[in-house]
Image 1 (cartoon, rainbow, N blue to C red):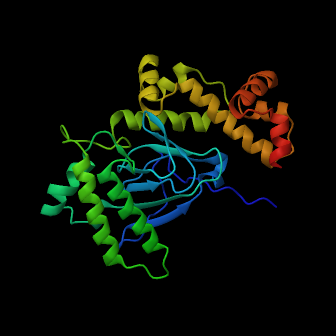
Image 2: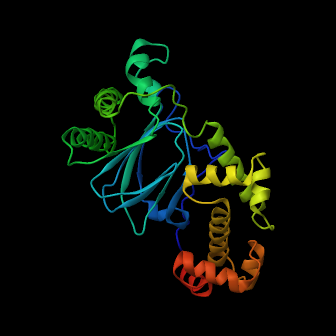
Image 3: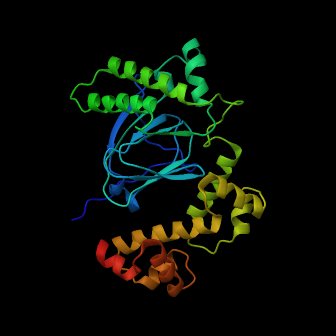
Amino acid sequence: MKEAPYKTLTDELYMETLRHGCADFPFRYYEEDVWKFDLHRIDWHWHKEVEFVYAERGDVVCYIGADKFTLPQGCGLFVNGGALHRYEAEKSVSMPNIVFLPELLGAADGRVFRKYIEPVLRFGAGHLLLCPQDGRQREMLEILTSIFALWRMSEPSELVTVQKLLALWQLLAEQLPPAEGAHQPSGETAHGKRLQLMMQYIHERYRQPISLQDIAAAVYVSKNSALQIFREGIRTSPIAYLIEYRLARAAELLASTEKSVAAVAAETGFESAAYFSRKFKQHYGISPSLYALRER
């Protein structure tokens, strides 16, 4: 019996619902393999916590808002709170990561938070790639991997963890350019909310015929505005995202049921089995029938 894939749990606005850590220590260490997640990806989500990721083994494809790039083995990534992001892998990878609330490093109404933490949270790009070729970033990666080593112990020290996080944060702040004006995380901006609502509209109605006008009307914007919001947010169009989502749901049905290709196509909103089969092969590199045989 095959192991059930992990899933990314979010609410209707793609905020991750999983609690990271606890109220008195909002920090969590994860050892993750993106390949083990549903469709080999940690799907679109955002959270208030900041995140540090490390490609320990293998390369990870990262989507952060409108940016898409490959995180090579041996490199790390800082993801700011509220940034909409997604990870993919083409094979098994080791991607240890830490997620924590910035308030762990200093009280939100205190001087430390105001002078050293808040400017980073206001950094507009939402993420920073960390490469060992850069001396300061290599130092950050060394601290990050030492935190991983600490939390791989049976009884990690919270005090040492915070000490290391403060050292890591100091180096991070030195890497970022000064923020120009207040930064709202992408999960909380007007465009971010509209994007999430349009994605929600697609998820709820993908079985039905949906046009670009329908998607745009769901958040009371023009078709051109809907195109712009999708392209800026996740580098694709609303209709391309709709097709990708239908294909993902179809792949789930093919792997978990005995339904025919024609039945799966009809159930996931495709106008014909032939069109569905063509799109499925373009996306997954294999026909729906062969995919079903391979995954069952």
